[in-house]
Image (cartoon, rainbow, N blue to C red; front, side, top):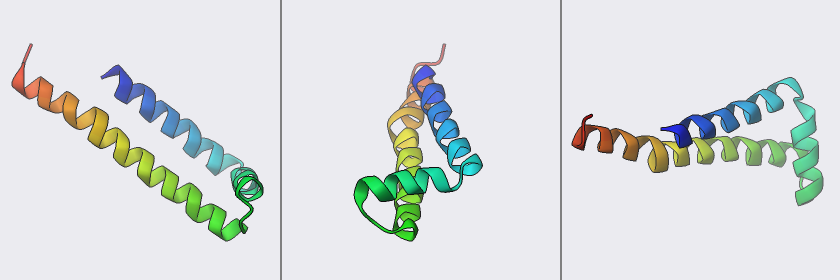
Length: 72
C-alpha cells in the first residue's frame, strides 16, 4: 500500500509541476530529446498515462487482490 501512495505522490508532484510551470517541463524535454514543443507535450502526457497505468497494474491491483485473498 505504501508503494502505491508514494507513487501517486510522485505522479501528483509531476502533475503539479507541469501545471504550474506549464512551459518549463516541455522546454526541458524538448531540449533533451531534440524535438518540438508540441511533440514534447505528447511525450509528457504519454508519460502521465504510462506511469498511472503502471501504478494501477503493478501496485494497486496486486494490493487489492492480496487484501481480498488474505483479509486481516
